Image 1 (cartoon, chains in turn brown, cyan):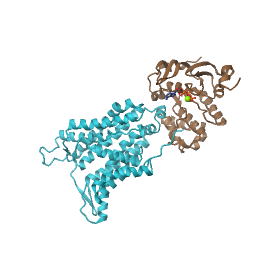
Image 2 (cartoon, chains in turn orange, purple):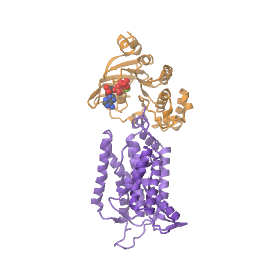
Image 3 (cartoon, rainbow over the protein chains, first blue to last red):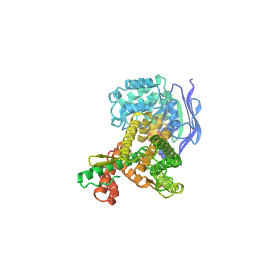
Image 4 (cartoon, protein in one colour):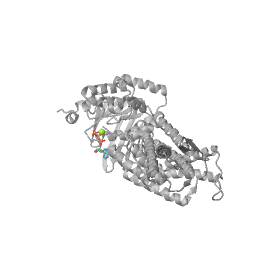
Length: 239
Length: 316
Ligand SMILES: Nc1ncnc2c1ncn2[C@@H]1O[C@H](COP(=O)(O)OP(=O)(O)OP(=O)(O)O)[C@@H](O)[C@H]1O
Ligand SMILES: [Mg+2]
């Protein structure tokens, strides 16, 4: 088994008096796609926000690449390859597609590498290439999601956090997005994927955690969870 | 500003217009400071006016300690060599940039997540603190600003343009152009734009948001220092309260132009300066001051986001 790239141990996070994460522990290993599924308000976004330093745990630790990152600023984590494509995509609506993509490379200095990755992004998502001078706000929901992923890739992630990439997208686009996620993973990027669409998330991941009201309730191989009666009943609409 | 002797209406109008362009340039230079900070933090930095005041005082004290003030009242002051003028202005800019960053660090950053009202009240507090602190440190008596350039008046047709006004307009134009290029073409400029759109996402792009905010305050404050020196060269009596009026008008200029927009600040400043000068000259100086606020009300009624401001888009 490969080394863990991310480890949360007994993490507690609060919004004022609201106890949003109650002792969350989870591990993501190098090269894996791990998914975190759960209902609305379960604490998925909070978990990702805590990993990338937008929220701080009141107790518990977050280790990235073996190092405690509990005090490391978000922008420093990005420079170290811990990158998030946020829920709602976080596109800069007034900036063009290309400007959005270039901001993804903000922490980088290798001009040639940036140009190469820009072209690579356009190869992955040809629709973005056609719209490179169009403002981000004018893209469709699916195109914005493509832009969010392409932009995150511009940061050269080692660990990519994706918050509900399928949200609000038609099934065909969702399929495209998840095929891209598979490919990105094959290129060597480790992925922590948050989803409400449990079925597709479990199909496109190696391992999975289920979070309920801020607590991890089930964990295991994704294939096994697809057959787990509890998961079937609560998240797959079966049984 | 130059009084108008001519009786011919057109040349009067042109003269007031020319005076107004110079006045408006100083408003514009100040207005960008409000607009930059507002763009990034949605905060009205009331203390900006006091940074302007400090700018002229920093230049004044350098000249004083350099021995360029008249020894006794009424004596003709020695004029300062041009290279030294440049140095004084540069030092005043750096000092004001430091003050601006310090204000942000001490007064605003601790309240970054405290909603919008608390920082606003704090801004007023910092502004008052500097006004009254300034009176304690510098004294309340107006100080005669040293002669940085000997006054010369150019005549274009019937219009008289003092070299100080020309200097104001040219300097403002160059600085605004430089600022625009900086914001649109450089890496830190891109960081400023990203922060003004969405600070949380900016962080996720690897942008150091705190450093970017400090930079924003530094730039605005350095420009305020230039404005402080330029105005003091034109109207050489400086006091700790000198920022109050221009600060208010520059703020109005920023809102009229569309707060958050750099070209808007320039346009707002010019519109305000020219109309104030023309109304004051042709009609009554008492009404001139009111013009700013009439403009504010009319523009906001017709276009709430200001002349060049973008209507805020709901985030999806
Ligand atoms: N800024 C906030 N202030 C207060 N409470 C918050 C805040 N953000 C989230 N919460 C609360 O924390 C809990 C977890 O929220 P979180 O956004 O992590 O859920 P989620 O699993 O991502 O849900 P969704 O699927 O709807 O995105 C919820 O109860 C939510 O109400
Ligand atoms: Mg969420």
